[in-house]
Length: 107
Image 1 (cartoon, rainbow, N blue to C red):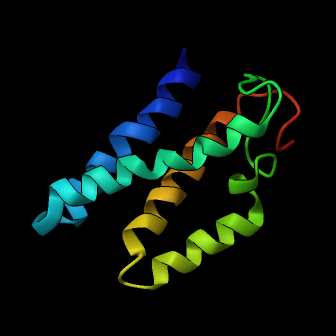
Image 2: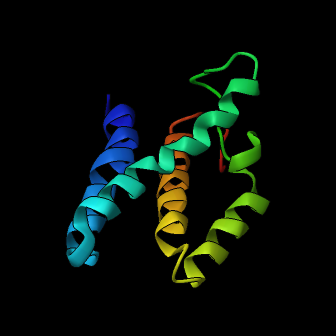
């Protein structure tokens, strides 16, 4: 249960908090973009099975690889793409926390 609340809390509550505290002049737009960061889960559709609760997404799915994470970091350096980069990194954080609950990961 803790795993579920941490994972989805980071996916949905953290983006709203970031929008509220750091994007005060564009809260709604920022919140929607930050929540849209979940779009990178589209890469799960090419996995078999699509969902496996014992599989760590990090470095397994194409949009969750270390190369992709590097691109997300670069996105945060450019003002026009910063919020998207943050959105994708928050998503990666949620998935990383989820991986901590899978035996054998990050030992």
